[in-house]
Length: 65
Image 1 (spheres, one colour):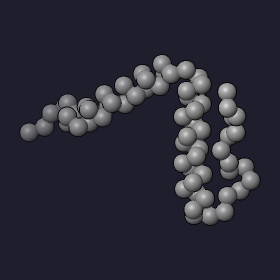
Image 2 (cartoon, rainbow, N blue to C red):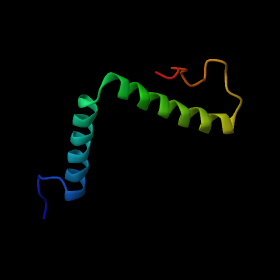
Image 3 (cartoon, rainbow, N blue to C red):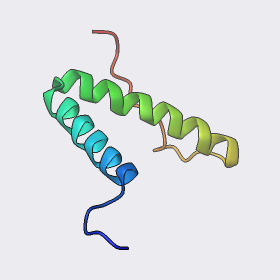
Image 4 (tube, rainbow, N blue to C red):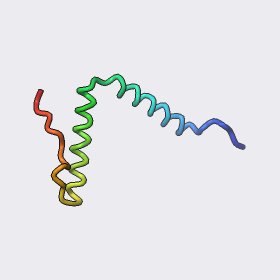
């Protein structure tokens, strides 16, 4: 038996993706930048454990505002 509709798990993933996109679109620019900086911190931490970081591989210094 085959159907044209995707399995429940796929539909849930697609709905979650739509919700996440809506939330990100609604975020302020400042909050989006804060998220990018947090992701940079994670990236630099992971890469720094594997190899020496290059000078350009650093977290943005935004200062306290």
